[in-house]
Length: 204
Image (cartoon, rainbow, N blue to C red):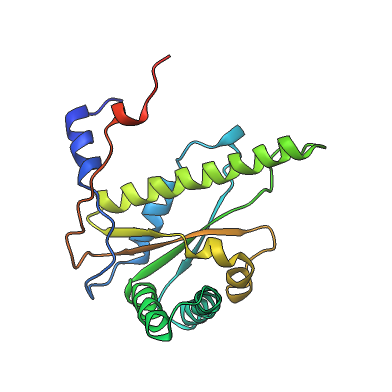
């Protein structure tokens, strides 16, 4: 199967990170459809180490936001950030996490990945699991764009893996990697410059 490359390139270039959403609901069926596309991502050894936690608005999301915000505050205080700036950053973060119709917490699991007796290969195998999960997240972002939805990848769970795991009662081997906001966009999103392929490529 082939698609028109120019149309595909234009589609990819038109995707934006969306942080503000309309009040319009998005059905659970649409979210399931997006996740099915995410699960078509390539993965190391085809082990498919991605896992998803889908949060509607409600008690579980509230608990997740509170736990994440408490850790964020602690980190900012340790960095010597002023109280006014801490309050500003927390409000911005909490608003985004609270207002999106859906949150998808992208996790990885080492379950099923190869085991090695040495640290070097063990570390490489874990990196392969993280790369695979990220590919699934990328598929999810593009699927949301194709559906006419906005989405934004937030890395905050990486800074609070144990806290997120406890707040959401996740299996022990699920490692939170990102929170992906989903909903109908209330903004166009900012166009940010990209380096050209020529700037970041070596030909050998």
